[in-house]
Amino acid sequence: MTDASAPSPALELEAEFKDFVALLKPRVMVLVVFTAFVGLMAAPTQLHPFLTLVAIVCIAIGGGAAGALNMWWDSDIDKIMKRTQKRPIPSGKVTPDEAKMIGCALSGFSVMMLGLATNFYAAALLAFTIFFYIVIYTIWLKRSTPQNIVIGGAAGAFPPMIGWAAATGTVSFESVLMFALVFMWTPPHFWALALFTKADYYNAEVPMLTVTHGRKSTRQHIIVYTVLLAALGGATVLSSLGGPLYIVATVFLNIKFFVGAFKIWRRNEEDSERDGFLVERKFFKFSLFYLFVLFAAILADSTLSRLGVWGWI
Amino acid sequence: MSFRPDHEIHKRRFGRNLGIGLVLATLVALIFGMTVVKITEGNVAAAIAGNQSSD
Image (cartoon, rainbow over all chains, first blue to last red):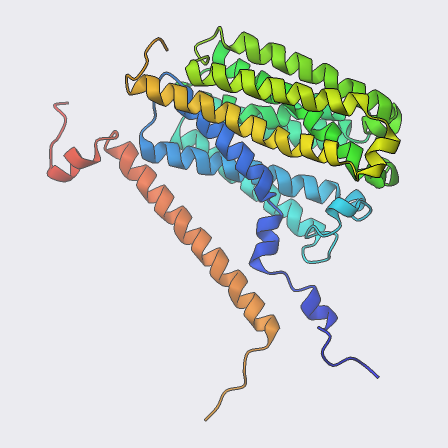
């Protein structure tokens, strides 16, 4: 006897629009859009507001295209890892070929549109970012080295540089600093995630630091990168990005981030198991807040400076 | 006369088509807006008012 109320297999596999949106990794896209917007707004020259909107849409689509291509290539391991099992490809809603085609089409479209809307320097940077995320990180580094996140993190760090390049047509010291901030922030963020997702990367045979060097070493790496990030955040104060709000934000955020990293470093596996990786989860959540507030401070300082509230930038 | 209610599969396909339609309409609007800004060199209001550059 069959259960008439159960949905048929054909219906289960029929993709909805939201499944195609999920293919573009919208949560990652939010970060990409925000940091790119800050890059655009912090630049000394300004685009027409409508072209700013088009540039942001293009960078978002480019980031989404990279997400779709990442899901296409990683569909085999996404099936294994609990965290990714519900993604559109492992759940059978979207085929890998569809994801590949959507990713390629959106990549080409976003790069061309950004070139036409702003300049081809920014478009070339966007194309390089997509190439770096897919070929260098996803296809090459992710499955071959425990430094995957460190080097691959560069892909997520390019958006503020693309935003800056879209406005100015060039790369400058400030845009490299924004790149470096996201680059340094990425390893502790992902290693905290790797600590509490536990067996996921091991089962998928992805050589994350937790798998290759052990969890104790990962805890040490987190605190080292947190110190490096704090030093970089401090050095940024000396650039034109370092307005009053940035100074307050970087002091507060780096102290709190360091305290979190220190707690992670002091803990052992028994402590973490006992409270369900509470400290690691809190640190991961705070890392998202950290990046958002730091870039919001850069945005606020540059806006207030432009409005003449304070003016040394 | 009564129509049979839509099957869930048709609702999903309609939702998908509607979503793609809206995305395409948005892109048309963006490309149109971008063209206007580029052609008027950012000074849309002056172009609408009929002002022309000296060259």
